[in-house]
Image 1 (spheres, rainbow, N blue to C red):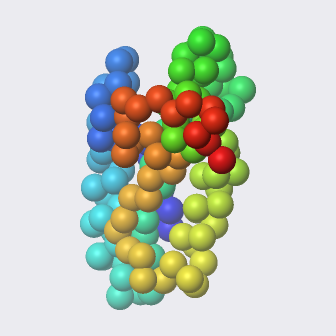
Image 2 (image 1 turned 45 degrees about the vertical axis):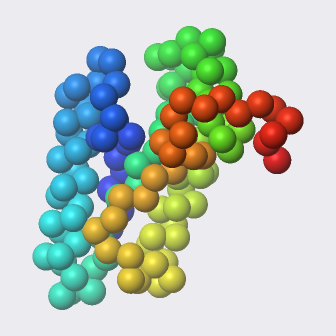
Length: 124
């Protein structure tokens, strides 16, 4: 079982209080369920993504902000849906059997260094 959450569960974001609180509760539920369902062989984890580049996101934020997000991401681009899906698929695989009750962050390194802008030539 994999829950989908966001960095808003840990970081305060403008106009995100209701969602952020809900995501924090979801992460707590993930930890509790990981222990309660472990005897049944069920692995429970969560994936927290930063802003995911989708058509829906473009509706909510201006292009200039999306450019800022890209520049502030050490990986050199925004998270795309496939990035999140790949981590979810891994967490559902046998290889992830010993990962339980964790929230895996998919953000291209943004949460590690939130105030660092990476110059294009430094990216691979």
